[in-house]
Image (cartoon, rainbow, N blue to C red):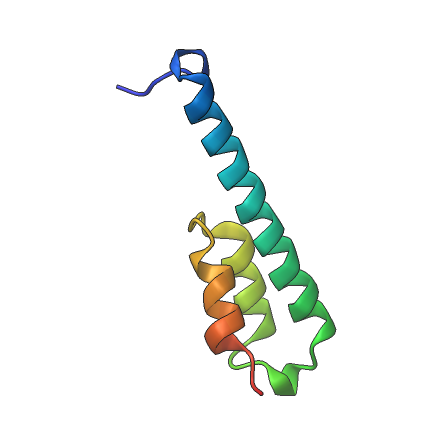
Length: 73
């Protein structure tokens, strides 16, 4: 059974809020970098990376994968 937001402790609510903000910030940073980077410096399709970054709810794993493996030096 799913909990309601109001059932969570204030500490848990803060943790969830901070984690969501961090994930959002990492996604925005990845998308900005992807948009500014030439396609020749990206491993794979820019469109595929953008779609994965936006649509996959990954706790930051897809944006981090982009930063670690998706960019060419």
